[in-house]
Every structure is written in structure tokens, then in C-alpha cells.
Amino acid sequence: MSNPQLLHLVIGGELTDLGPKATEFKDLDSVHFVGAYPNYQEARSAWKSAAQSTVDNAHMRYFIIHAHKLLDPSTDGHDH
Image 1 (cartoon, rainbow, N blue to C red):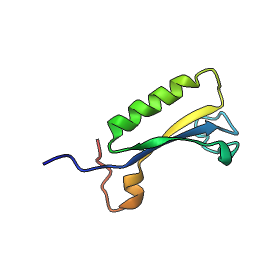
Image 2: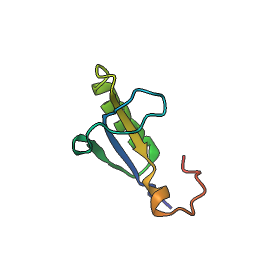
Image 3: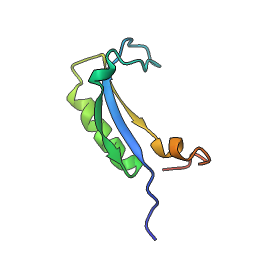
């Protein structure tokens, strides 16, 4: 039996603040949708590549969204 699909989204963009917990995008129209991935490992690889490509811009941040948790809130959080 194959592993279940655990949808993860990778997005990024310039933030309004550089604080450690900052998550507010400067311009929602400019948010970069990197892609949708079937598991955390593939999402992390895409996240890492996107983040490294913008290392010179301190305001750029990329995030992995555990979309499967949003689609099925009854999950226990053990996805990797």
C-alpha cells in the first residue's frame, strides 16, 4: 500500500516585518505560489530551493503550509 497523500503548499513573498514570528506579506498580489506537494519531504525541497534563490533579500520568506491539516482538522499532526 502506498503512503497517503498529505498535501503541502509552499508560498513566499516579502514581509512587512523581519521579526522571528512575522508572517504578514507586504503585497498579497505578489505572493509567490511555489507549488503543491504530496508530502512534507517534497515540499521542504521546494521551500529550500525557493528560499535559497532569494537569500539576498532579507524581507523574503517562504513557508510550508500543511494543507492536509486544513482539509481534515481531525488529523493528529503526525505527518512525517
